[in-house]
Image (cartoon, rainbow, N blue to C red):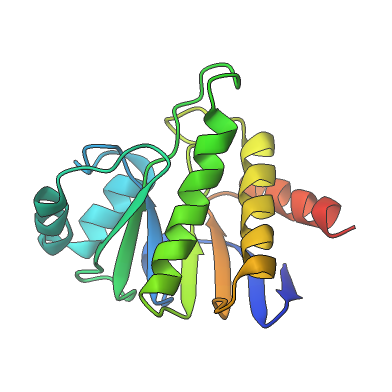
Length: 178
């Protein structure tokens, strides 16, 4: 599914984010930037040791923030590492922190002059964020950013791991569009 907002194409696809050829891919990292499971582990395995070297130099990243490293052996030139919140009960600033993780990643991409970025569904794996809520926060944040940005990105893509996740994002985007 794909929509155009201003001069930005927002698309939703099922796939493997490590194969994306966007300028940057976003990593759902942990605050120590220590590599891990899920998307984080896949990106570090596919990108090679250069990414981890740079992560060690950076040292860490607070929840809701983002940092950037090389893409190593990936097709993407950069990896933007962002830390989403661990979901507890929805009353512990989770929505605010998740929105911030997306916004800070977009701001970092724009500040680096990048034209395209690919996101996974942040915090919905091991961090336990309910996919329906997370999709709405992610898409609303991205759409607001596109509408407000003076130098918008040309392509913002969500790369979802499963058919189920893709369907949730598609239904959410249809709802937000209307």
